[in-house]
Length: 370
Image (cartoon, rainbow, N blue to C red; front, side, top):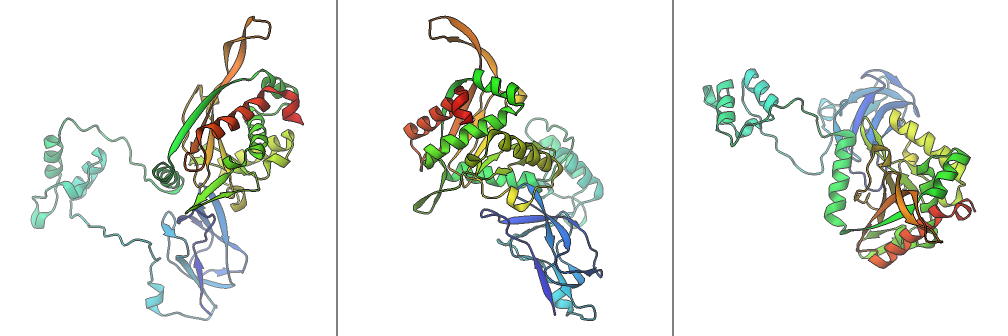
């Protein structure tokens, strides 16, 4: 019996995935439930299990290649079963037809074009049959406006980086962004950080989760003509890795203690940097926190992580003058918070009220621990 291995859909917004590594070669025996391929999608990795026992007869999507969800990436058969050659030759389907024109060019021309980041289809070839030769590329460089900088390396926009690029592009095109900014006295949060030995990000996640429980419109999404308000409060935290930006999710953050949030965050961050996040650890986010304070960033306007309604940007801790209750000017640790929100769902006043509530929890030690 022929069994098709297909590209899984790991999240609601996933459209394509790429193959990181095949754990089995063509012709090798596989057991049902055994991990056979590493799938890279949604900025994390996932081991796909064999849907049936048998022989991995044909791999259709090779390592490093992408395919849309539900595309056939491999075929498993019984040990003594053969399948028609035409079925073995089937390529994974694509969502949109793409025509790739091959440019006839010499190896030297291709090498020079790569070095300068030139699209060979734009170069007029003077060689036999219109072949692009090295002199054609040199002429193109000389005729180009200005002086083209030499390209150090070419990095394919694929895997995590492509997913990030697609998501932020979609977010900015579809969700009208607006941002409100607020300064927060971080004295109490700093005390909590020292006393409990928990990270600042964990403290911020705890404050956000509590504020979301009281301001549910920030914990929602828009689908067509409907706004869906989530019951679960699942806070994603943006993590920078060598592979790109990853957003692991702390599920039911409003029901976790500060120590539990800190422990979960440390575990997820380590997995993210090792590329070992599981499907459920990157799915179901309802709000995102992006902290760039450790990079000396004071303020920035983050882009919403679709399909969520808002994202909180966190800057670095800096001493700033503040007026005390008795009128004295004191220097206290302060942080700038920037909330970007989808203006289709939330107006300025509700967004400001939510940010005020986050500020309240960060400035009140007892409220944050209760």
